[in-house]
Amino acid sequence: MNILKENTKSLCPVCLQEIDAQVVEDNGKVYICKSCVQHGNFNFLLEKNVQVYKRLMNRSNLEQRRSFNNVMIAVTHRCNSDCPICYLPNKDTPDISLENMKEAILNFDGPEIRLSGGEPTLREDLPQIIEFVCKLGKRCSIITNGLRLADRRYVKLLKKSGLKYVNFSFNGFNDQVYQRINGCSLLKIKLKALNNLKRENMNIALSVMLVKGVNENELQKIYRYCLKNSHFVSRLRIRTVVDVGRGCEPGEQIYLSDMITAMSKIIGVDEKELIEHSLSLPCKDHLPCGLNIHLARFLLKDSCVRKTKNLLFRKIKVIFHLLPKVGLRAFLNFSGGKIGTGLPLFNFQILLRAWPDKYRIDLGEIERCPSSHLVSATGEVIPFCYGLILNNTTLLL
Image (cartoon, rainbow, N blue to C red; front, side, top):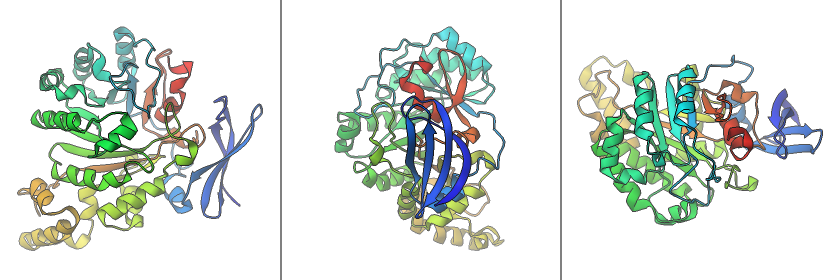
């Protein structure tokens, strides 16, 4: 056994108190070992691949605590769906008041406000909230299941209020997937909502909740859809389901290394290349629980393409590099007249997120997380994953 991190903090999975922890390697796997005075000792698998952990997830001593870039505000706990997997199953919690919400937004120094739930579109004053955020010069986005967005008039109303960015939950192109994850068939209404967002020129991030044994095979189709629609889908965000609320059991966890392996096969590249690419991005893009891929930058990383001065030869090389990776239709859709000009062909990103839960959270690591969660009761903002874990306690009410 090899100690990778001798001193850090974690949570007791029983009482959720902060406790001392260590991170160790054993037979190529990484474990977090912690001890609670009241509830005893715990050892949990943190990551299946020690190299992935060392390269991407063990950087807390290298960076100072960063300022939060964005804050997630659960504007309501109500929802128009009753999913078998839900991070916020308590729907009876009163909505945060508009006055308290505005005060929290005014007090937050970061540039982005993310309005979530429950389902944020159930708040009748959502357009008013969006308008308030936008008038402050902050970026405003909503995190939604998209059901109300099947009404184009409602999409137009949100757009008129200033909304440009939508994080849209989309778990696959198979209604059996939605039956398992969301409890009912949703594909038709979600495709209608996406079409409305496309017609209104919204900027979309497709958010996939990856559930073991349910929708891993949908990733290839979702990836291809994003490429073909990269003029309005700018991000593919793939996140694991964790043991929070009505989540998965601990043994059903998907790890970051699993996601990297799956994505490398879909794109057709080596896993190590994806890791090195993510590490080459600006420091602000490094997250303790994930990996980022700027697809155009990654696929055109070959210096022989970038340094070719002859425009015709450069265009030819770009074509030969991209076509096998993205396909003809997607290539023609997003390339236009920009090939070889030095302008970005497209700005599509893939974000892999292996969220920690109360078993695996390393409180030292999340000190460098740019995302935060509003504690409604106090107005305090805390690291996002910490807030996610506390969703079912009175601390966030």
